[in-house]
Image 1 (cartoon, one colour):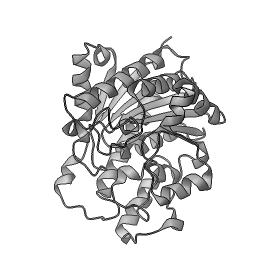
Image 2: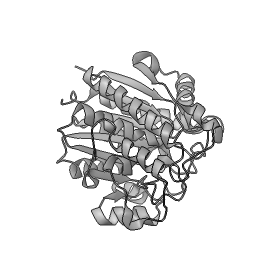
Image 3: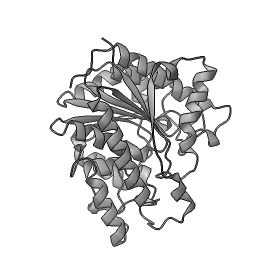
Image 4: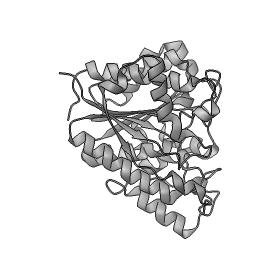
Amino acid sequence: MSEKIKIIQVKSEIGAGTRGASLGVEAMKIASLDAKSNFFRENESIEVENVNELLFNSAEHAYAKFIDGVLIMEERVCLEVYEQIWDDFFPLIMAGDHSTAYGTIAGIKKAHPKKRLGVVWIDAHADFHSPYTTPSGNMHGMTLAMACDMDNLECKVNDPKGETMEYWEQIMNVGIPGAKIYPEDLVFISVRDLEKAENYIINKYGIPNFSADEVKKLGPSAVAQEALKLLDHCDLIYVSFDVDSMDSRISRGTGTPVPNGLTVEEAKILNVELAKSPKLCAWEIAEVNPTLDTQNSMAESGFEVMEATARAIETRPVFVT
């Protein structure tokens, strides 16, 4: 019996600082056509309505830009992921900016509130800022702080307004109240662009981080197995793949490219090996931005990783509910 994948399209860029990530889903569809792939014919898909029109307004919340829109998107993504899990589909999320990954996490926890969720975060960034610590105010850098219900007041540098924090508190209660994951249940891969506040959290909780150099040295398959071993105590595992985890020389087609990242082949092997785990309950790709690219290069690389991962999901042991 094979896994039934449902593609959830989230064409949102409300949490990003650079425009264009909302076009990443369509760019990967174009990449599939160029590759003569049947992927989008073989798998059902559904699109989550976005609120990108809010971007035409001024950002009222300096330390959490467009947080009102981000809250709406987290709620919508949460509900869609929850419903697909309950309909016995495996959610494969194609997202714009990475902030909505919190909605995915919240949806998983809403479906499985008593199960411990482990997260493999494949990204150039830790995304562990809060309105109190953010240097930019862009909420795609706050995803894991939302998921862990963490303000990190020890590293406070900002003084956000009361209304901002009211929205922030509402976000923490999307799906089910409070924290959805523990920092101890996180594994980072290729995270390398960090601020002081994020380093503080990583050191405080001892969050493992496999660098791209370690992936090269140990091999992506071995790193994937080690990541799964570190999360062996968790009931479920979610993998979130931000394409900026790959090296900036591969393509400029993402909002925040960083040198010294993964190759396409390393990213593909990593995700495919992780996808073989029967504990995997959702997989996500985010941050393809074709407006920053030439010849749709990043979308092609992202689609290559996504299609290979989906094939592994379809042929693995059926998801344990």
